[in-house]
Image 1 (cartoon, helix red, strand yellow):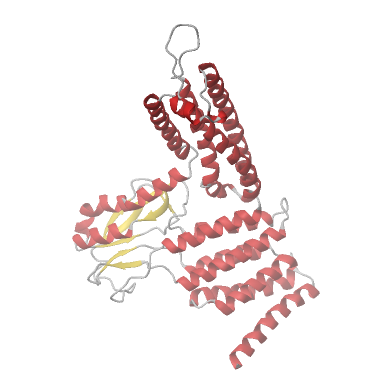
Image 2: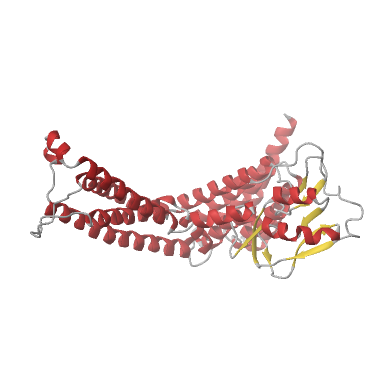
Length: 442
């Protein structure tokens, strides 16, 4: 259940209607509050202030001001919306459609739309209570406080509009996009489950008859496995003295009707089926919740697009390589998240597979190696990044993947590059070997 709530909350945060709707409702409530204050105070307090800028407005002037504000706000809101769509279109073509989720999470764009819409809503609601001045004998009522608040909101939104133009230009810069993805990667690493505390838990620490008494739970809905609520699985499995093993890796596609979990003993399947389906969140897209490979694939996609003949942007590809290498170091330092989970008594209750660090490293650098083949500028930088990783990583699986890709880059370079260029790659490896030998002797 918790994983579904988190996924729904992320979906709301990535929408262009949620924050503007919240601000619109806030403006609706604010209009009633300020009008109530006006009815309680009247306009004598403005006269006593004797400040020209805050002199009481007449009915005609208040209507004109509020009408102008409302008309201009809805017009500018349309311009802001158009600019936002233009940026999304450019980002999709330049960086890939999967990066749209990052742009839609941008609070500045959401707030700008909400600011103009809420100012428009507020001005209309205040305008409807302005009476008098039309010769019909109706008692005049001009909400002076409400008009001043409308003016203040207008000045604020105009200032925000200036900042929005700067923000739009900044948001499509490659370095800014890569920085956002890098921040998302760090946030995901911080949120991933830590290794189990207390008793040592091993993948082989399961009931001896696990395979002999096994029940299967089938998926009720299809989609990408976005997140798993481990705490719910462990609690329910402990209550029913069972063990639950989620079959698909987080980030993989789940086919409706296909096995999604195994339960031991088989007699607990019926009792745990609803819990398992509530604990797993599926959707039409991969998400940033627990899918570690998805964030790395975003960086990989930008790099592959930059290396395509249509883009031909090796500098962006080099920046992506740097970010990917940095992410691998962070993953190595943090440690692979726990995939075997036990209850408070140290009894294994749940298996939740995440993407392994070794295959992930191999996948990323293999794709980069193939895409940069024949490009000395990028290949040399990729080799230098792998050499750096070779000297930093501590996880055996990551180290083996890095070593394999180092050897393949040198081997592939013999056929894809000229002899002189290939010699430069060998020189990079030789310098790194010499450095390692020097450090070891010291």
